[in-house]
Image 1 (spheres, chains in turn blue, orange):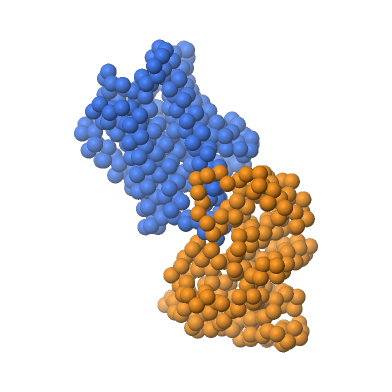
Image 2 (spheres, one colour; image 1 turned 180 degrees about the vertical axis):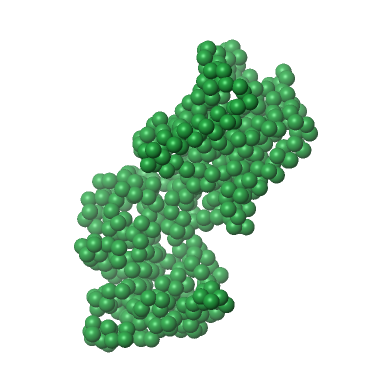
Amino acid sequence: MNAAFLLTAILQGLAFAGLGYGIYVSLRIFNIPDITTDGSYALGGVVTAICISSGMHPLYAMSIAAVAGALAGMCSGLIHTKLKVNALLAGILVMTALYSINLILLGRPNLPLIDTPSFFSLIPFGSALSKSIFALLAFLLFITIILRYLLKSDFGIAMRATGNNEAMVRAMGVNVSSMKVIGLSIANALTALSGSLITQYQGFADINMGIGIVISGLGAVMMGEAVFGKIIKRNIYIHLIAVATGCILFRLAIAGALSAGVDPNYLRLITSLIVLVIIALASAKKKQVI
Amino acid sequence: MIQLQHISKTFHSGEAMEVKAIQDLQLKIESEDFIVVVGANGSGKSTLLNLLAGTFAPDVGNILFDGVSVNQLQEHQRSKYIARLFQNPLMGTAPDLSILENFRLAALRTSSKKLHIGINATFRQGVADSIQRVGMGLENKLDTPMGQLSGGQRQALTLLMSTMDNCKILLMDEPTSALDPRSSELIMDLAKNIIQEKKICALLVTHRLKDCIQFGNRILFMKEGKVEQDISGVSKNEISLEKLYAWFE
């Protein structure tokens, strides 16, 4: 694996931190494996491409992408809590619907961004590469601080307790249904931001970009937790850093497989296998990961 | 203060396994009553507590708090008045959250959970002071995840948590049946003191007839979804274990 290849994987990993945090919120805080992720990731990319190519400032485009992702999460949350549909099924419903919505929004299967400003070009100094590194690190720092504050706040305590002990939280005057809807909105807003960054990084949005992305997110979260071990329980910052690290490691694992000569057509098979290996390793240690 | 008017509740209505849990129940509970509820399994004791808490609504009848119907209020809305202690000592706390965070949530039981960080030095000190009274040494372990404590410790903290914010009604459903004798005694003494101090209305569902003698000012004996015996005052104070036991014949 050469240095440029390695660096690309790390940068992609940083851009995937939003996805990792999204999965962390839905899976670890609410115990919901949220399949909406596939759709909201692509939605984030599609919305960003449309907004930026129509001349909008990249930060506005990213904000709109985040709101769009939140709306998708809200739909899943409402279907799950109001119609009492299993959370997995609710996610699949919204993900399926989003595929058509993304296609309608985009009007064609993919939209390239050529010579348009991006989140990375907002950095006024340095080479293209250092702009990317700096912008992605700034983004990671920003969402880490925001998410950590949110989770430590009174609202966040109620949110974390919801996935932990629903009966108790209800007795503490928390509306569990609203909490889940808000939680899934936050998770999918974060995921959409990842879709937005990847679109800007690779220079195009593609209708299929979200397929299987939920598994990448799951794999990244589990990988980070496996590497950091028990200390993730100590505080939220450590857990978030573990998740972000997991995102990078996961990208590196896939880049490693590709550079070892694996046919890119096998990419999703490789992704699934990597996740399966992590699950198997954890289950050998008698630890449930999902 | 609490009135139950002609309450009925049937589960699996119309099916083979239909259960008439509560049948035309009439009950008035005063604001400083400490009622011990006894009865055979399936006599409707837990259903009564669940109806008061709003876990489910009655099929027929009205439940009034201070003269106002609460039938339409859901569980999380009624939690403004009601605190609960369950049989399973793990039910009242969130295991992955620290002791301090659990208490923070409890402190906000009747108010909104805002986007600001509410755990500060003052709050920490307040929790440490209140935990000190149970004498378990937990005041030095405020950042420990709740899941690492024993059942007895968690039940004691649940009791403190559920009554720290001015609750009016405490519902206890066999709160000590999963605990060892020493922890049981500690929990019940703590409950008794808190109920007296804060002048809370309390209902204790129990299978230990000794509790009827030791605690409360009133005993309800339930049978087939109805109140068979309702004694208080002198007759409550003079009741014997033998007499209580005879009710179950």
